[in-house]
Amino acid sequence: MSGDLRSVREAARLWWSPARIGEEGRTPDYRFSLANERTLLAWLRTGLALVGGGFAVDQFLPRLHPGLRTVFTVALLVAGALCAVRAVHHWVRCERAMRRGEDLPVSRFPSLLALVVGALAAAMVVLVAVGWTR
Image (cartoon, rainbow, N blue to C red; front, side, top):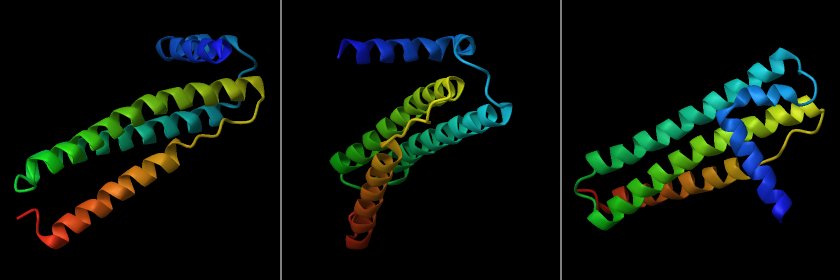
């Protein structure tokens, strides 16, 4: 357990000092590093879109029950924040794996995020269909 905590702390340190990643292993083909960076940016855009969706729910659905509106808004804002943090963490893990010649790490986060967004979207469809947003 302490080894897992140590590796998480080490990875978090690399967020603030990405040049230290260069000290590990061999430099991968730059195309792979650039692809990893594009993936990071795509996840950051997704996080930003979720944050924007949270603000949109709060601002553009004033007739929605205040409790429900708050739940949807907070859920989208939290999902956006988690998406951004997870993006950086995954970028570091992939970059280190490529430098070490290891398999790329797998993540359940995309599936979890898809389920959360799908559930929120389905709930909003139901609310609109029954007229709770008027």
